Length: 526
RNA sequence: GGCCCCAUCGUCUAGUGGCCCAGGACAUCACUCUUUCAAGGUGAAGACACGGGUUCGAUUCCCGUUGGGGCCGCCA
Image 1 (tube, helix red, strand yellow):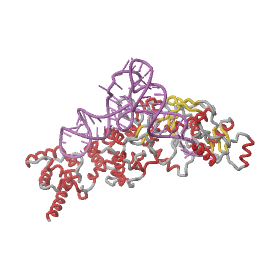
Image 2 (spheres, chains in turn brown, yellow):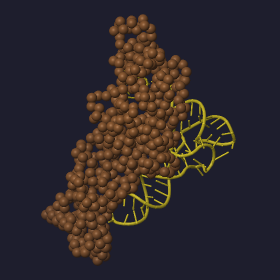
Image 3 (cartoon, rainbow, N blue to C red):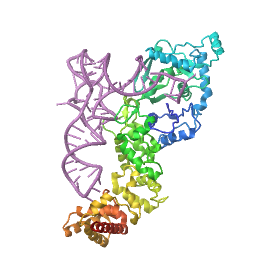
């Protein structure tokens, strides 16, 4: 059993390609086959490396390893379609010899005009074969006119093609409706559809698992294979991934539009948050949630994306949702793949991410999160044990508030010096400038300072006693305390916060906040 | 326009003739817990596109309609 995924190097690895690759890989792993990565760069430009790199990187990040292909080689090398041109040309000659293809002398303009007229007259757009060079005399005549021939497939004029698609079941095509597709250009280069089926045959691919948009293209490929007497691979056409809340295909050409789309808002916000730390502009293409790169850059767990993508069009049963990579590889079967397109749902992806994130050991989460602190200049490189320990404590206290790696930046206040902590203005005003609060906080500060131990349990104990003695409620002082030490109105438990900051920092921050409150207060009364 | 594919809650899905006045999950809402924000707990609302058949019985089978999508390139 051999499968392949054959992306064209477009410069970005997007969600749809990732899922197609994943399904191929899962099927391959479940069946114990070989996974081939082939690059369909038929008319690639000069910077192949640049446009290929994101795809290779994306696949590796997702843990989709290939047995044969770029970087690893294999018995069917080369794995770049552009390097197999001679073979494709030879196959075209073979097709010509067998009468399965013919030289056609129509110019591109003539073909187009014919097609447009056919559409205008609501006729079939099938080529008329008017410029077909089917006899020596005609060929000579056309060539005397200075025409250069392309090669077209000579499609059957009757009969039915019955395909047994692995997810769609029986699909029929009427041969007489199929176009005489061009397989070789006037300049001698070959077209994708020919190259694709030739390479699949040469690479001994047994299952072609690809996106639905190729279903209509299958007859011409079957025609080529049959004309050459090749055994047909099994075909399997996967539904495409649709835009959130719609059935439109997720398109890599609409990236900018998605960035403004409400459904993507949560993800886009994460991108905006990391952008400065990564030295990127907020709307950088790499931070577009339709590309896999986004998830690597913002600190997703690859297994979470794999889990989500696997379930976008496939389900094992009516309740199993959480899968690790190897569990999927064991359970995956093509017959449980859905036939209808599935919309990408950022919210659901985030839910999978949260679950996978929390499933990680703290040490693993520390490793995931650390690069963001380093890049933001908030942690040393490499981070020391003490730093790792501190980050671990923050992660444990934060729980599922840190959903993706980049979320650690919400807690940057822990990594800035006490005299540079930034205060949220509204929070400060509301919690620290409230009458009487500063005085209570100052009194509580002395209790804290007097504590023997400086851990969360002690803080809680101290506060509870203080509240009783002062005849107040916890809420009367704790909010001011949070703002004083973190600069923000929201965050995880205050007692844990104080413990992580330590005695010196905690007291210094409270003192600074009190001084600022005093200043603001005197300005008000002036 | 031609051909092909598809159709269960907002979303992902379970369902292969009776177990389904349709189950789970995400999202939503309410209540609860609570030191904020999350999380948690409890609960609510929410779908078989429509019309014909077939059948004792259709979400499930067939036909049609409607809707959505893909392909129809000397792009991949």
